Image (cartoon, rainbow, N blue to C red; front, side, top):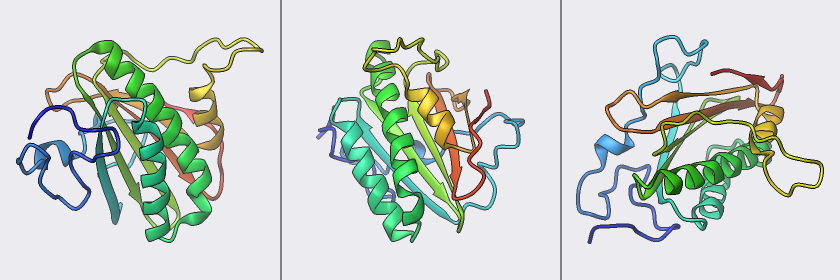
Length: 186
């Protein structure tokens, strides 16, 4: 079977299970390499807990990513961070679905969750090479505040272009139980 799977059907699981198309999925599961100087972002560093999920770039991917995140944080015994991490995943996944669909280049978004005993790093890939931009949401607007929310609940966040030859970008946010400062890095 190949092509787009349903939004809640993982195309590759964090366990390294085969992709829906029968491939190993190892190339996609590997986290995109960030630039060497990403404002101290320790992506390659000591993250003993790692998870990966690829979902169809469909609106249903967002609630699937939220539920997956909540379950993983429960398994990792990081439930104190579940609400803010779930909010960040929801906002970044929503933006990724919109960007991927607009770009028309990839039928998927990719989510990585990395953690240690006190912090969680969320990374979301989408097919668009355009940088994330805060919308100028009016007082009565129902949307457009996603990146403001990410900034408010995370210690820091930013983005980088995928350096592994694919089009697209990765938007990331780091969260911990302490020192939520909302610093933007790009």
